[in-house]
Image 1 (tube, rainbow, N blue to C red):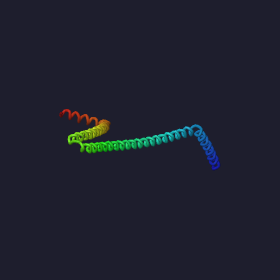
Image 2: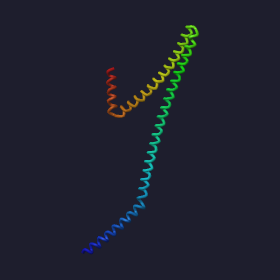
Image 3: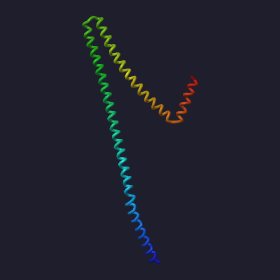
Image 4: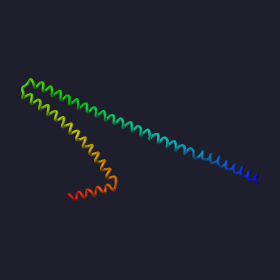
Length: 166
């Protein structure tokens, strides 16, 4: 009986080994290549995404550097214009000392008007930029408020109640 069990065990082992080897060969022929190809494609996709993210990061840094450079140039230009305006004013004052008092007052008023108009133009530009930024911020806030249905309903109800009060 033990001999029969040993033969049965060895035969069973032999057939299991044969089936396992056959299964491995079938998997190698039909399944491993597609699986490895899919893994490689996934790896390439991830590498591509990482490279794209790095490029985007570099572009963002370049844009920020360009923005900083433009701001510095604008500030330097503004300072140069103010310096030129001060120089013109000082020259006009020096020239006016030699002339009659009425000519001196007239030239100083012209220089002051020029400086004031430059200042107004700079303030108008600054106000325009602040207004643009305010609109962008308000748009983002409104988008955030309107992205949630509950918030939309509360906003509509509050606007309706405000309209009824007015």
